[in-house]
Each structure stands twice: as structure tokens, then as C-alpha cells.
Image (tube, rainbow, N blue to C red; front, side):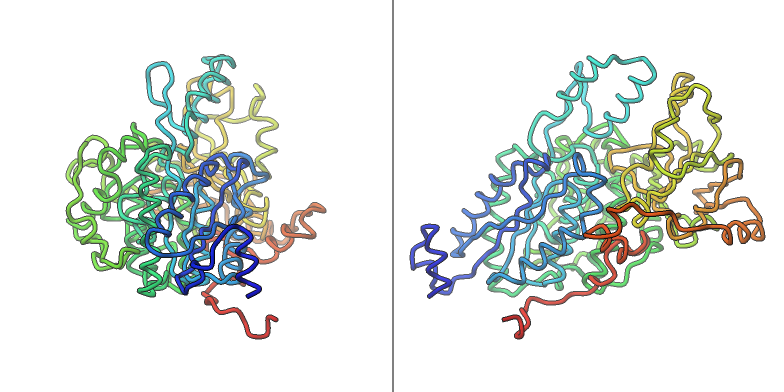
Length: 558
């Protein structure tokens, strides 16, 4: 009686306590996370669907992490989203859960939470913004931020023009409409089978986004009856489908981190080598910024992810029987997908970029546990390159001097920015694609090789080596690089090497000391993060959160 009576203070009558499934709607709505600021309305659509199917829907908040505003980076808090989501799902009397996400860290965070609890769960992502429009052309969120900033620095764009452009770039609710990490993870939630087929790409303000949400509300009630749980969906085959889909859409390198972390939650063996091996036969089919020309609206109207998955299936590169939240194999769900624009979603024999051009996984003495590079966003002439290292111990150190006309840097140098890894920053921010030095921008230089233990926004572009592991903050080889050293990058050979003798590196290692930490890093959540976060090659999850803990509340909890 006590539980029912307190629920009735919200106006629920006794008829809802008749044994019908209780469906939690985990919402990352927040006005501090612009990509998620419309999820309150999405939640209302989900509730309609749950009521229609005979369930009892209850919305509850989960921490929102917007990459656009959070300091020092939203990635610092992805694991906290997963922790909060997991504990709330387990602690409350729920039979199933709908996961509402938007900006890129909330999607993997909630998937990780659901995987750890393993109650029936379905994801509804908030959808991309409408295409940006500026001076008669399309502009992409994130991607054009970097381009416009470079134009302002080079003197080819005024500050006033930039202010106009930023309003043109973000003109509706939703997440980035480029193939950034938010769009990538929405697509991969669908490829994994955790989101209804065809639902990842509907724009946030399209009525069909809300139809999809309502359909998910109906479906979760049936999933509870069927006892269809994430452990049945998130199989090794599902992860292989997602990795190949990521290559075909020209998806974000951040997907590597998130898929590795999610696989660890469900006990699926997945490593960096899998990402490189599985994409070798997959061409880039989707012509979207930052790798191509179009935006998510165009992708949606061309047919969306089902077209990509159908083309993978026809090439024999999709595990057709991998179960989705529909209860059916993914192959059957996409078998009839039609493409309405072959320029946006290219045919298999006329790809945007050839097979194997997705995320490359590198090895070598500079990254013994791996590093990644997004080939589709890189400059072809720099994929094999040797140059002089110009080293900075933090992104801030680089930004302090990058506008200096006397900065000792040339176009064929290799910019190294370290101290940006999981433990080092902490949180592994999206800073690896630092801007080209202003003096070189004015000379017409548009790209340089950049190397970092940090991340790059999925909306970013350039020849940037990311996620170097182990990171500099734990004494990885990146910590030993000195300005003037020679570095060789060979993407076709998948190698990244520091051309310094082993004896010299051993001497440098003996002199290395761990960087001092700020007071903020010595207590609270930041202490917890630095003490327990794993390296990038393991997905930067916490070491104590791997594996599923189930949905039962321990008996000794009272």
C-alpha cells in the first residue's frame, strides 16, 4: 500500500496497479545539453506508446552530458552516465526500460547501463538537426566550426560573418547533422539491434521521429512479455555488424572507444585488431560530412541505415540472423530497404572511398597498444609521411603559441599533443585535431599530421592519429618524444614509429616522472576516474564496471 499510495499523488488511479509491466523511460533531457533539450517531448511520445500497449510508463532523469558545453570534456562523464543509469534501473521496480539519448556520450552511456542490468531495453535517439544553410549552401555542425575558425584566423572571414554562420549551422533541435559521433552512435545503436530499424536518422523535428518513439513505447511492453534482453541482442555478431556499418557510413573514431566499452559490459571478446580486420572489405558508401558532401537529412531521405545494412548483407558482410529489439534477425528487417538517392548512399561498386578506407588501427613503437586514424577524413598524400616532431605537453601549451608568427614549425612537421588521454587530462577530450598554426594557414596549408593520446570530434577532419595507447600520463612512449625527433606514419602498413634508438628511449624512460595532479584530481569523481579508468584500447571504461551485474537488488539491501 505504501508504494501505491505515493505513486497516486501524481494522479494515477488504482487501475494501473493491476500487474501491467512498469516501463521506465530513462531521459537525458537537459537544457545544458542542447542536443538533448527536446527529449521531454520525445518522452511524451514514448509514454503514449507504452499506454497503448498496456504498460505503465514512468519517466526518470539520467545525467545529460553535452560535449558542446561540459568542462573539461563530456567523455569524463560517460562512465558516470552509465553508473547512474545502471543503478537507477536496478534500484527501481521496473520491468523494462526505454533509453532516450541525444549527444554522443549519452547514447553509449545508456547502452552500457542497460547492458550491465540486462532488463529488456530499447533505445530511442533524439535525431539530428535539420541541415545547416549558409549563403545558399549546406553547412555541417562541427565540421564547419573548424573550417570557419580556420577562415577567421586566416583573415578570409570576418567575426560578424562567423556569428551569422553559427546561427545558420544549428537551426533546430537535435544533435549534429554531420556524421559525427552522435549520428554515428545513433546508427550503431540501430546496427547493434538496440534501436528500431530505420529510426536512427529521422530529424529531431520530423513528425516521424515522434512516431518512432511511440512505436518504441509499444515495442518495449512486448519485449517484457518476451523477456528479450540486451544480452540476447548484443552478441559478437551484432558488434561485427556495427563495426562494418561504421566503416560503410564513414563513422566517428569515437565509436571504437564506445563499442569496446559496451562489449566489455556484456562479456563479448572485442579488440582493436577486430576493427581493422573487419573493415578491410568494406568501402565507404555514405557521402556525408566530414568525409563527403551531404548531411543527415539527405541520408535519411535516401533511405537511411537500412540501405547500408542491406548492401552489407548483399556483399555477405552482415550477420543476418543477429536478433534486434524487434525479435527478428536484422537481415530480414533490411531486406526490402530501398535507396532513393545513390549519390548520398553509393552503390557497392561505386563507393565514396574504396574498401578498407575506414578507421585504421596502427601499431608500432610509438603506440604499443594501438592508435587509430580516420582514413576517410585524412589527406591521401599524408597517409605515408615522415617528419620532425614538434611536441606540446598539453593542448593548452599548443594553443598558447599556435598563433605566434615566429613558431618554429613547417608544413611537413608532425605536431604531437600529449597529456590528453583518459588519465592525463583527465577524460580524453576532443582536442587531437588542433588547428594548423596560423602562419601556415595563411600560406595555404590545410592539413598536417597530428598525433595525440586524446580524441577528435566525429565532426572533425584531417590526418590525425588518435587514442595513442598507452597514453603519455602513464609513461607510454608518447611521453618520451622530444621536439626534433623523427616520426614515421605509414597507414597502408598500419605502423606508427618513433625513429629513436631503444637505448635512447630507455634512458628517457628512466628520467620520466608522472605529471603532478591538481587538487581537483585528488578527490571526488575525478579521483575515482583517474584511479580506475582503463586505457583507450579497452574503451576507457572503469575497471570495476566490466561485466553484467544483473537486475536483482541484493537481499541485504534493506
